[in-house]
Image (tube, rainbow, N blue to C red; front, side):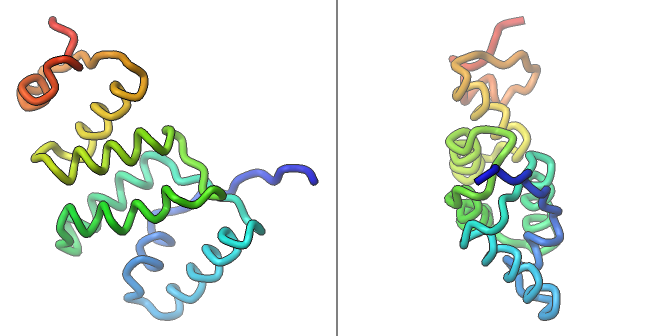
Length: 138
């Protein structure tokens, strides 16, 4: 069977599914993810959409880092949900972000550097203090 092209997920589809705050949109999002689970659809979760989900859930809806990491981790379990960044790096990014005061973008950068076994070039003092081995001295 030929492999289908992955459809790109938008932030609002994920949010409506996770929050269930707009019943008619939740139902539509639920059907999409049901098809994904059944292998009928393959979708791509981009880094920017994941980042926007983190921001909206934290800043607009006031969820804790732990709640957000738990909710978004579910999307990283499904085989039919593809990601731009390797799933282990995204999981590590969520874990780092949840356990630290780093913002999401910085936690993701650290996780990407770790997954590629490379260093970051940064002026960010918090990253330099917490992840010394991952910072390229400049």
